[in-house]
Length: 161
Image 1 (tube, rainbow, N blue to C red):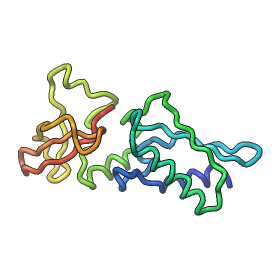
Image 2 (spheres, helix red, strand yellow):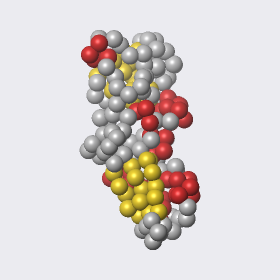
Image 3 (cartoon, one colour):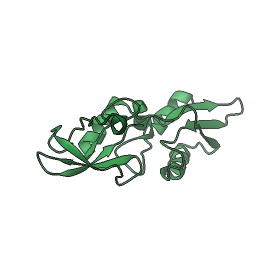
């Protein structure tokens, strides 16, 4: 199998916490390599150190490849460079919005807590930007809880990092 074929298979592996996103959408699939002996290495970057979903992602990668007859695979976690929400594809951002999770509002890091400026976070239900932070801690470590002041619905926001 070629690297391109491996990528095509892995582009279908979904994130266990947000099943509408693939590991390619999230940008955690960094590289694949095949050594001269045919051993495959898949390089992934966790969204943050200690992310509990990474174990399941590794299992899902191996399972997807086994479905295509690839059994000799090593999963290598890269912690440098650190993952950033900048790596989420435009398609991934759109999938988040359609799923009901507001995508990151800006690039790289959210410094609003330092500057006192509020982020313009879009409501995934009604698309209003009249929203407010309820809690910096959402349903998972990478999300915060917001509320829309127009439709009054609460929603998750995928925090910048």
